[in-house]
Length: 79
Image (cartoon, rainbow, N blue to C red; front, side, top):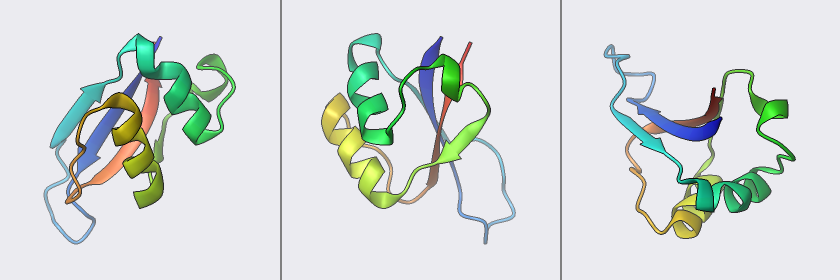
């Protein structure tokens, strides 16, 4: 199991196709889970959750990678 961030155009666009995808490296999983308040991947393996701006900034800092700010971002657990 691993964490995956996905990005889509905001709702006011008709295009609902995936525009961004990032698999979180295992070395960053615990920090990202701490930011989200998650205790385990297994407990959160039920779909994707939206990321707010603060979470997005914190996760980008934790994983040392920039995340797009023009997309609606979500995070989920992939089995």
